[in-house]
Image (cartoon, rainbow, N blue to C red; front, side, top):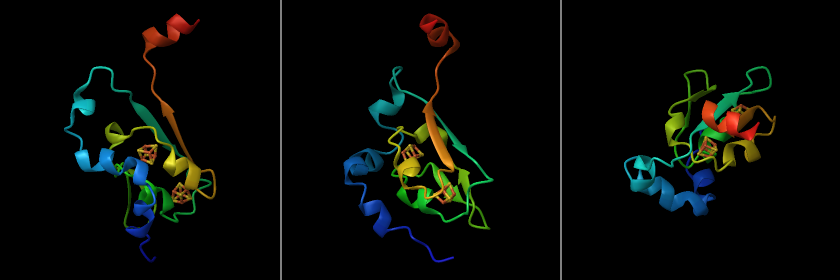
Length: 106
Ligand code: SF4
Ligand code: SF4
């Protein structure tokens, strides 16, 4: 499969600074940093690679067969670019909530 990396990532200008700052910036160390869970529904995924190409934080990579795998969910900012561009609605990102936070909502 032909790689679509490069041009596609340039589209995400809003997140360019976030990406360049890398995982060791202050936001990463903040105790208030939000954490996200990235789910890929294998039954719907056609391994097009768009999600990996669009992710400005390199959270998603492709395996040897071109299927997306979560490389590092701790880098995810919840920007939603992968979800928005998946043509098959096969990827979902949601914020992880603590048990304490969930119990406070009830
Ligand atoms: S929401 Fe998707 S595109 Fe955005 S950082 Fe997380 S995995 Fe990457
Ligand atoms: S964009 Fe959607 S269909 Fe394409 S590889 Fe990612 S999850 Fe699969």
